[in-house]
Length: 171
Picture 1 (tube, rainbow, N blue to C red):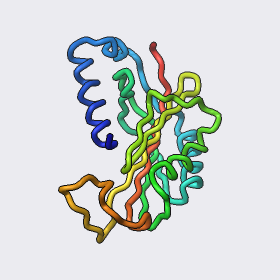
Picture 2 (picture 1 turned 120 degrees about the vertical axis):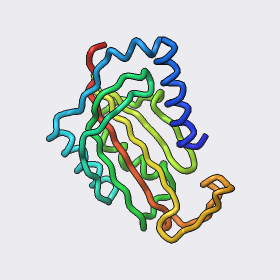
Picture 3 (picture 1 turned 60 degrees about the vertical axis):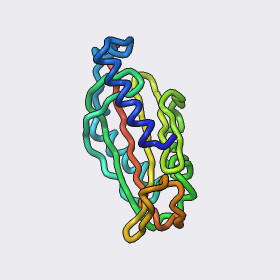
């Protein structure tokens, strides 16, 4: 399933759970907050070193799609073209090394031809990684076919990576 479709399903069913009082709705009491700014900057530097392109740290809204809890995250994002990543898994593997001592969380994982998601847990901290690609500048792909059918070189893809790190409390 394409990454965009899975995210849309998570958003749809997550919202339905909140509206209709499913077990995930009680998790709304949980509070998500970003890790300290200095730590966020450190993770951004490590991610940048791992992928080889600029990764900028900021703070952003965040929803934990596994239980619907909301809050703010340490948000690290970057994008680049002219990269030779074989596919989303290649880029994901590079960023995942930053979280080598964290526990893999399969409930937060998804993979497709145009992107991948992965999650990690360390105590009351959660990290999510999302990587994706789209046709880069000057590349045209058919909008009548899936993005995976667009036959272009890895260097012609515009790669994007996002990392969100939160501290979860209030459970």
